[in-house]
Amino acid sequence: MALNPASELKIALAQLNPTVGDVAGNLAKARVARAKAARQGADIIMFSEMYLSGYQAEDLVLKPAFQEACRDALER
Image (tube, rainbow, N blue to C red; front, side, top):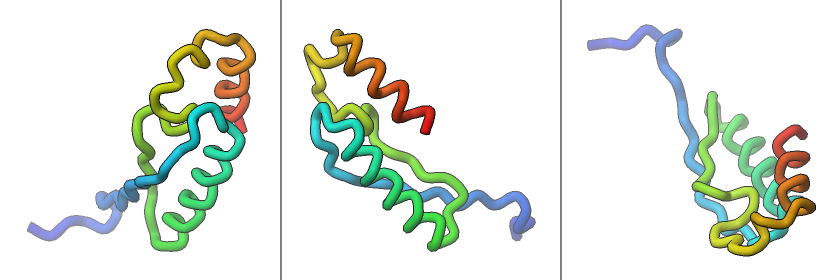
């Protein structure tokens, strides 16, 4: 069955190594990956769970300043 080109969705999967707690640095890596995926024709890019904060952030997620940094990064 042939698909209508308008019904196709190209998804990029990003497998990056985030640094725990480095929201700004992780966001910068995500932007580079997003730009590369867009150049390759991706419509959407998927990152791993907790990519922005870094997995196993543990106590960091309880700190208001860290929570705010994550929210701010998502709004950019």
